[in-house]
Image (cartoon, rainbow, N blue to C red):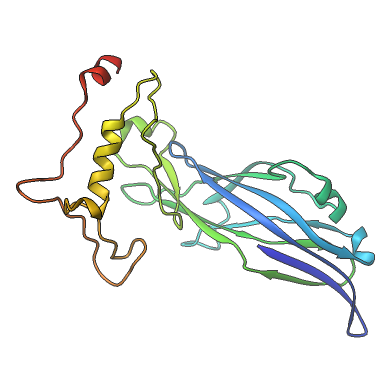
Length: 240
């Protein structure tokens, strides 16, 4: 998120602070909690505003019930105070601001709750003009599926709605016992790679990622070469 604030005298800018705010939003998979961490970058500064202080609070609301103040709650937080541009620039912490939040609403069979977080800025000085470009706003959804009893001890889990889930693995990965599983890597690569001519690679579409022009297609191969699970090798089974 890009931001600035300026001081005008007679229609002329006599002082200006400009910077960027980097966000990271993390949702817990086994609890109805999520966190927002931020890093403040000061890109330029001059004039009397260098003695001002600025903070970057997170605006929090339930998108379904914006007037409700308890459905989405704040937890522990650090670095949320107002500091001078020089103080922000001198702070070398990877994440200068850390905030924790909770989704308390539990609607329906799956106990769904949602919270929208929006970045903002507050300046402590005389009259200034504040601007935010590329504002950041994301929604977290939390729920509790009755079919996942082993993950429900903390009330369910949460996901960031605008993020496409991704799973990364390499052919040299190892399990906690130090055993590699290249056969699983090869099997997944064959299934996802159109060049393998297996007719098992998913075709984007539908209301997902990245195309919304048509339905998704996740073919299962042919009757002769159907999509199937990867059998465990005897070595992997012995190490499980």
